Image (cartoon, rainbow, N blue to C red; front, side, top):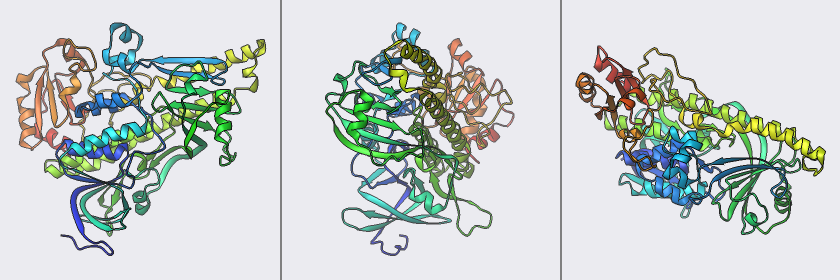
Length: 568
């Protein structure tokens, strides 16, 4: 047992301590548990977040959760399955509709009928589309999965206090909120999933870079049985309001009774504190309606990424990397435009999870942990800039919208036509499959490049590729083309997968992987269309589904490739 720090009554030990039980912390705990690695998660709350921040799961996050077998549970907790995902743009909800975007419902995404596939090209790139689900509904699904893993311990109602790091581990103090008891936790690694005001990041003294705080917003979270009755826009997931006295966005939390309204302040100098929710909501809808206010939150759009995602060992002359990692909002803050922030954090958790498991299992080298920041930080910068740019476009079109947009006469109609054209231009951002699925780990120290040109990185579409660092492409491998049909994605998960259209040649690389202790399997390809999709005769895919190496011939020194991809 480790010596008990001051004021701690006892010490418990765990390989990984996770601080924060939001979607990112729960994903990290679930990922470690799914891989059989012991961890402890502490969260001060004893229930789901009260005021929903994130409301959208992207296709890549759903692919990750597919491996765990929980996508049906997510769908059950999301918007009703038969509701199309409408995004509407109106002067007010009872005023003039300016534009509308239609996306497939959960039912259409699951069934994937030919007419649906013909209408929505995004469904060619993944079994999944965007899934509208409020954070209060998502967290219980992730929590149930994490708790079902034998190696995961969840302590709700426990507050993280501080930590002390040394060369062999981290000693943290946590406190039972109800009793005041303080316990010390000795862990090999500490993972900060404790949000944008991260206590751990502040203790490390790590600053945030980027544009920083952008414009202010106020969110009203409310319940109402009348909301859908007072306007004729139907059930949608996003309702933009373009009336200049109440610019903002209604978001569906459950598609039934729970909604939020983000009241946008384009002028950052305006005071956001003294607001009457009933007045703001009535103006945005266009008439008063009955509702129960559940919460009010003052916040800012951000484009901020932590300078470092990992601690440096104290008293180290060479700045050796430490044992504390940042993930999710502790590492990056986003504007919500595009629904990318939580999904980027989920990607952080999956990346860090398999690497921690590899190191703790003995086959992963130190470079594997060093690669976490090298891979995920550029993605956070990319995604946060995309989100900030999306926000700028929305703000610009709103700010250019004059009060006369509501006029019923010819002048008003002409103004609405001009605004409608600007909205169509701005609304391209909602075609975001490339943002969610098209990122790749360029220049990673644990990926073996092949010198080929990098494919286009287009936020609106996906160019399927096995370019090293890319997400390995999806294609259905059987007759079932519904979301439950077998996919190439199902080949990847716990270990490395060597996909080969010439398996009789691939033996030496497979043997080198096994010799170095990597969990690895070979998956032969017989279907010519799949062989074409994977672009090379041999493609090595990591546990997270990203390509580590590819080639038409085997490497001359297979063990060197094995050492690179395992971080040795």
